[in-house]
Picture 1: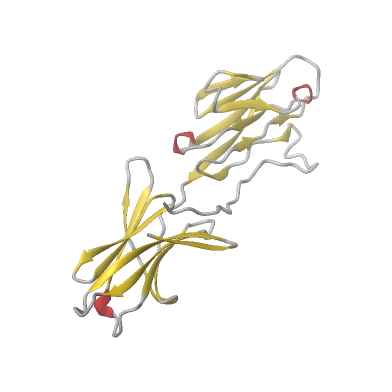
Picture 2: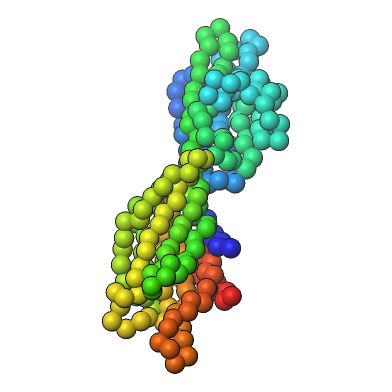
Length: 241
């Protein structure tokens, strides 16, 4: 299994004392979030009077909460914040591709108003595999990632060999697969190790899969020894199979 340490960016609608408008103290802000992470859309109207009012949350056009009461998935959503100060923030647990949508906070008062933010879910390319296609051709396959990666990189003995545009296909769930092929015949001298790397768009997170190329005993043939690589910003971890 390929693992990694995610170093992504999740934008929260923090105001730091600055009012987004005269009608709002905090508003939802569009954000990109990694699949499996939690997220908060913030909502705090500027309550200029003590007249009773309602705050509602919508996912696209479907209402999911009123004030601090969740109407939708109670395992997924929770309304947090200081309600007496008008804070009705939408907390979302373990976001998935199914959570991609536009989220609207609506303040029902004498003058109803609303603010919107869109959630986009990125999926890391955790599954990178290498296989031998035959006739000395090595195939690198990165599956179920989002957004699509436009480059794949081949390294021979830790030196960059080539930067290629992969063949990309889209899956039914909106994720993408990327494929690249490398012929060992392109080397004048066979390398001892090859590595295929994929860079996650937006975050520049690196996912890699290396293999060792060992010569067959007395036959000049090659065999592949799979090596799993756990890449993180602070280093890497190798595990031989």
